[in-house]
Length: 421
Ligand SMILES: [Zn+2]
Image (cartoon, rainbow, N blue to C red):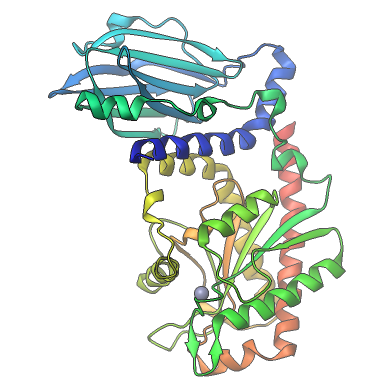
């Protein structure tokens, strides 16, 4: 499979994931209008342009709000195809929008209920050199889609544009979309995914005979039992034995379980050896400090060494799409992190002097599931090491986590209800 078709698959995958995230809004709109296109977003001609750039083409499209989208090329004739969720293109004025000599024709319209398409007919083979959707920095809530196209040899273009698998363009119609997590919440049990870090060939931090992988699995099992006893909560473990589970698979497990909340559990070692206490991490590209950055990097490296290459995921388009989906999820993750810190402090357990930190942990990158990583303590600290294996300490920490989950779930359900109104 070529790199480009991998990218396409990724984009479609992410788009489908996002569909479920937006299903609530879509269902509501469809109910109100009864039409196929509820036009969540509008194309904004002002500031949009398609123009020649060197021997390539530059595309800037403004839309009134970020939406799932995908991009690909098609051959015979050479075309650039952009699909957007719920964008009303209105009447596009070709000449006003495009001054590119390489663009022969341009059309936009409804593709199928809920999806609209923009097609640029090109005067030769071009590849998508870069593609991104950025939210409007002015804070007005809009988004800009920015692409650059570069000339490409015809053979490569044809290979990239060939569509042997039409399924990759098949998208679920709004009516058959899975119910969004927000809609679901408050009805069934809360689904909590516990993710004990490392395992199998990846022991995590090792201090003498103590392996992080064992410590966190034992703790996760206790937490699971206690959550089940507490009732009203469904618990799914990403691993329940000493096996290696790739980071990507951990996320897939959470998604398959339709998780409401994802909690990664670790007990790492810090080279400086001075860090003690529990730390709660949420996702950010820019780490709070160097130690957090190293920790996140090491988790990814552990995974890499175990034979899983994450670099293939580092496609910019998918990354930006994920960022957009996260705009809804991130505040919910942050709130759970705060609830956790509050509960752990209330239980009078040791916390790191900066109890809530941020770093680019790959396992927290689910776009649609609030995700938090809890470092129970540091195996590199003698006192933490002792606490981590003390049943009384474990029981207190389990209690604190359960109370944080309860507090979070109540508020999250209340906010979802507010949003539905
Ligand atoms: Zn770890």
